[in-house]
Length: 135
Image (spheres, rainbow, N blue to C red):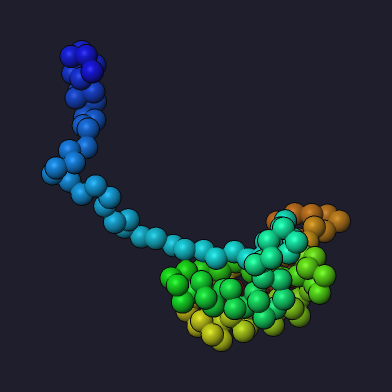
């Protein structure tokens, strides 16, 4: 680096990391791990490990929680693996996750598009169910 460039960088208070005096990879102050399965775009044929049944979805979220995830994002699928907006199925999955992981943060919305699709349309039915979720 040229002398002028070095002086200019020092004037802006930027300093190169001194690998001998500082940690190379300092630990983050906070870390939030979010598990989001099965999503809305991938099919079981594309990924045979994709959880689509209620049991598989719950199992995936519980495993992620035990591995350190503090938050899960829930979507559900029908028997053919197609994303659906069935309140009863959401309720079943959410309550089972909360039963097995009482302090996990649960986030969800319907992935299924509505005629008048909006954020509100995707959240409103779930929010009205009174489930232990954070949206």
